Length: 113
Length: 423
Image (cartoon, rainbow over all chains, first blue to last red; front, side, top):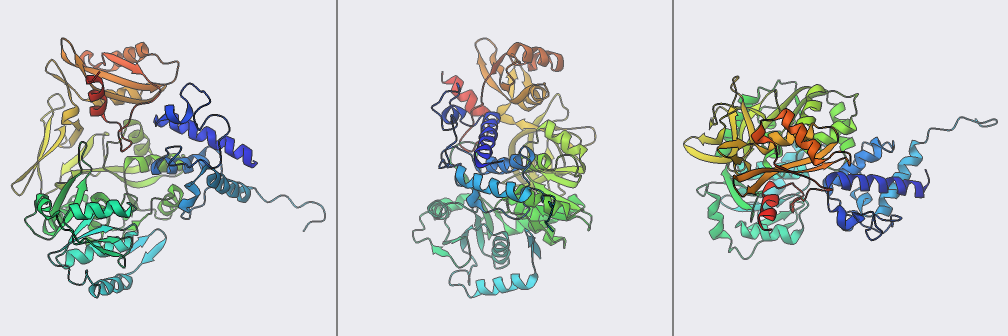
């Protein structure tokens, strides 16, 4: 997936989660699907997950679980740097890293050993 | 002594920490003094708590990661002489100890104690202190009731800056010679990895953590033993966990009294088991006549504000907060029971049941439900009529896009009731 696709998928996850948890959806997404909330239109990379999108620490952990279970990106088992949860951009960076490491080794082509 | 994440921290490391505390400007002589601890690192926090307990000092537990200014304000309010922030080396003396007058509210007769702010459902958080002596009795009784097999390995996901994780997860384990593993709450995948590598685990967690584990472990992993506490376990999650583990355990208590009961194998979501040996607990005699849970610990009476009853097997079944109970012409409706029924309906994602004012009846059952667009409030009422006694069926069901939460992100029945009463 390229960066834009990852961002789109992340947006779906966040929107779905906010809807399910009923956490201030009206202010963040525009309850009527209108354009004024930060989740409307393209997700901007500088949006802060906590301050702007109102995701609390439990929701961030839930998001990490969804990134693995819904997007199939294998989250590593070590402690993750809390910095990945600063902004949309930093989280997409992290997802991109996961996406790259998850790609299975390409089958060796002719002449490649 | 304990493992923090994947790192085992042995007794010598603890000894080194204790020796550094002994030469610390303030910690060196802690007897009769009260220290606020705002420390994220579980090994450091456990070392500090054990040290203060041993040396007749008092400790106030603050949630690790609290901003410095807030932590200082809490320390001052609780009459602490100083605050340890993040690590023992960062010690801030609290100069103005005006809070001392209030600190006597802790009610432990000046004995060296463990202090906590109770989460308090309404108003200001309340300072609660329990003497180390009392805690020692509780831990012994806890281990007696838990009857843990020596092969069980405690894996503590619950925060160790709260008594559930610290006292029951860590200190009780150490007291019976079992080494706990404390898992940082940063990556559920790490928790799952540790659990997988610890086959005889006894997991200490709160319901939301169990929910994350269950959704991440999708199907393939079975659990050994899961302990839940801190909040009611939603019925669908309980069913899922019960199927996927050897046993789901639940313990119940409150900040004033510590742990009061343990169920070593839950038979239903409300099953909190039996009182610990040092506790006498009064509850209602039957499901149709529940009563407030009132604990008697060595003559000290603690009203929990929760209601429940004792079932035929002698297990206490918890039904909810006494002040959430809705009185319909003398018949009591327990919101959690109605909510569980709503949540079992196809298409319902979230539900809350709370007290409304009825012009004639006095009180009425109201519900707010977050459901798929195809589900209407009439369908919900029809579903309830099939499952519940008529007086339990919500008289008003509102389908909403979201249920309003309080400042802590929790659904508050009281908040919803108060909002509507003000209309």
